[in-house]
Image 1 (cartoon, rainbow, N blue to C red):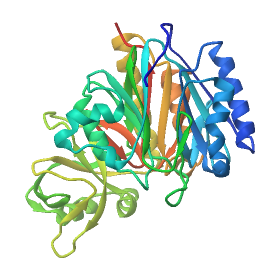
Image 2: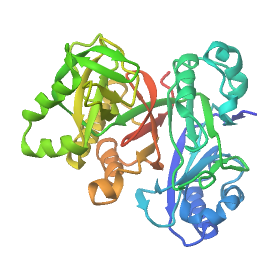
Image 3: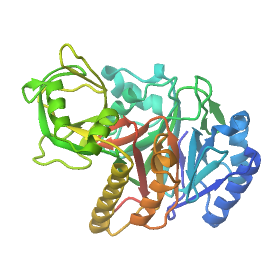
Image 4: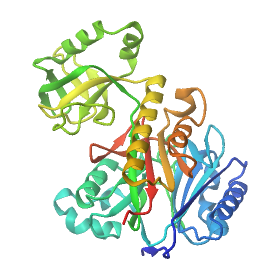
Length: 407
C-alpha cells in the first residue's frame, strides 16, 4: 500500500560506514542519519550494501528498521557504494540515504519479467503491476537484478505511460553469477527481478547523465541500416568512413580509437547543432570485414544523425564537469533553487579504476551544487534520461536530483 509522508519540509541525509560487520555498519550509519534528520521521520530509506557483506544481507531490513523505524526501505548490493560524502570500493561498506518526504505518496513494488505487460495491453495492466495508475507526475527509482530482469522493456513502458515523470536507478552489482546479488524492499530480500518505488506529490526529479565521451569527426547521416547493423553512412560503406576518420586523428586519439570507440546517435533530429547530452552513446560491437557494415548495441534507423565518440579518463572528467555546470547554471537561473538530495548511479568501470582516485564524481557534484546529501552505488548498468527517453547505459554516471515541486 502507498505511504503518505506528513505535510512538512523535505529533508535528505546520507551516511556511510565501513565497519567489518553489517550489524555494526548499520548501527553506525543509522545513528548518523537519525542525528542528521533532527527528529524527522525517515519516510524512505535507500540502502546500498557492499557484496562483501553477502552472508549478512538477509538481516539488513531488520537492522535498518531498528535504527530508523518503519520507513519504506529500497536498496541493493553493489560492487562499491556512495554515501556520506565518500565513494567506497573494494572493501565492506554500507551507504544509507534517508529522506523525509512531506506530502508525497511512496509506492514500493517488486516485479519479475513475467509481470511486465506487453506494449499492447500495458495501459490497462501497468498500474496494477506497479501499484500506481499511469499519470504525468509519477517518478520512479528502479533497481533491477542484472542476471534475471530485462530492464529496457520496463523503462520504455514507464516513459510512455508516465510521460511527465523521471526514472533513475541502476542494476545491482557485486555478484558474478545468478543469486549473488541482493535486492531489498521493505522487509523482503530478493535475488531476482527488480525493486523500486514510485513517488508522487510534492516532488520534482531532475536528471543529469554524463556518458563520458567526446565526439570526433563530424555528424553524419545513416543512409542504410537494418536493425542494429549500419551498412552505409553518408552514402558510403561504413568501414570506409571509419578508416578515413582514423587517418585524420592525432596519435593519442588513434590509440583510443583502437579500444575506446563508441557510436553516438542524436535523439532529437530537429536540432540544428549537437553537443554534450544530445547523443545516446552505444557500444560498437564489431565490423564485418566482408561487407564493411558496423554492428551497434542499439537499433539504428535510417536517416539518423550519428557521430563517432572516444572515451578516456580526461574526457569523462570533462564531460561530467560540463554537464553539471550546465545543469547548475540553468537550474538556478530558472528557479533559484537547488536540489535537497542526490542519488548517483555510477558504472563499475568509473571510480578509482578510471580516475585513479576515489570520490571524483561526487566531488564534481558538490563543486557545482554545493554541499548536499549524496548516495548511490557502482552499477552493472545505469538508468537515466537522454533526449527525453529513459535508457540503460554503460560507463555512465547518472544523477537523480530531488527537490520539492515548484508551485
